[in-house]
Image 1 (cartoon, rainbow, N blue to C red):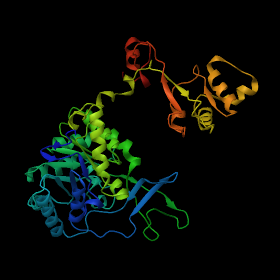
Image 2: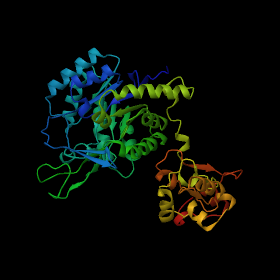
Image 3: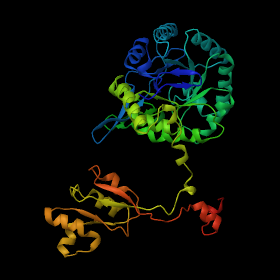
Image 4: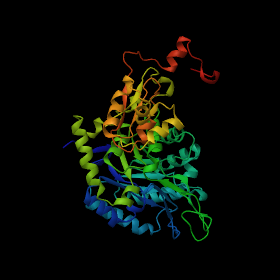
Length: 444
């Protein structure tokens, strides 16, 4: 078995899978059950002055019958007494000394930060996570994303925490910003020991068209919530990678956002994350998903001849470049397997209405008596099966991949590399050669 253990700014855990701060890490009983199942760490649900939550607080996005593709919540920080949380954190850490226990915090004044940090450290926890990302409820009170969106305020409060703490301090960043690098650099300049991202995205998941109120409805009112779940993974991956690529980000990153499987986790790690945090997938499927995550990541590392998860970290960052550095001579075309084609016409319609209309119906060729060499195989297969099958005119195909994505049959449409021996040439190369103009007359 590969070594899955990690060291995150001095915080050690047997694997990179941590519970994110949220409903699954709200009590000691929950965190203990998660550790029993194999989770490597947990970030406790945010502590501060206990609040009162609304009844009806979750909304979800369903897509084509798939439940909770996106998830929205208007839940706030802990509604349990601080003393109760602190006692349970201490009990959990004593029972599982080898697991990472990080305490999420959110308070207002400098003195409040000093006091809650002192009390959190007394539990024996391994680290602190400053919640600068919550996009609802708390931000209206000058906390959460209200701090995360203001780099100067973030830097000042983070510095308070670092000065007051004797254990590693992480900052959880808000994605509700124009450029994630700016608040990330502010946090590093304040001396924090790690970053976690993303927190949730301001959102509605829908509107009740009978009562005319957004979801989740609290009577006849609602408010924007925080969006999470599988749908936010692409945003989270980009933001994690943007920080991991930034030379000024010298601290480890904990990736959060839409992680449901070992493959999701591996993608975050390949783009620079050291640990990954999971919340919505646990709310959907329970703590036991970590067993598949551990087994899957282990088998993947073995298949890649990696002895440690640390060998995977950042391996995909070299492939993340600016658009101007992409190879313009790289060329792929769509290829349809006539033996798998079911004649649904989804690719034909998509290409005709949204691309270059390079996909054609084989049955139309049969009717016309066409037998061009490029379509012979598809036409012959169609004739043999009396089927409705498509073929691709490779001379017209631009390799956009749309047909591959709309096809409902796995492996039916693949993208074939036809680059041949064409040399690498990017847009920036062409600018340097004088064969392309600088976009917008700006810079190359």
